[in-house]
Image (cartoon, rainbow, N blue to C red; front, side, top):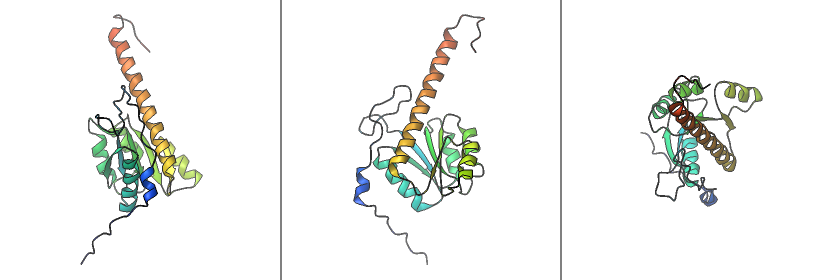
Length: 181
């Protein structure tokens, strides 16, 4: 007979985490948690239940809408959706996640990938970044550092979307026969 999983209790000081960015970004439709617009979505893919719940709790308390998956296949499914989250936090070592960054990037090129892992050697960091991760964070992590890295990812995705929109506008308004580089 299986015993029910214990309910996780988090310390009270976790309730006072830094908040998500408070200014909506028109280029990416990223909005703060207290606005009527939807909260910025963040994808978590981790096979460890406690890690998943802790990470989801911290991001939710910071004002993000969290989408949680247990494996690489679930993460791929989320990233293939038209409204895919702009940031994905992936556990490196989980089922269905062979070469996770290449697979996630093939599903969605416009996502900021953060590898969150217990692998802490310098060679691991190099391998993770070379495999396609945009950022690398070692477990256990500091919440403030994680939230700062998420904000960096959101800024980069926002700039990428803005540049893509401007390039598209330039293409549409260019004279016929002119080629833009």
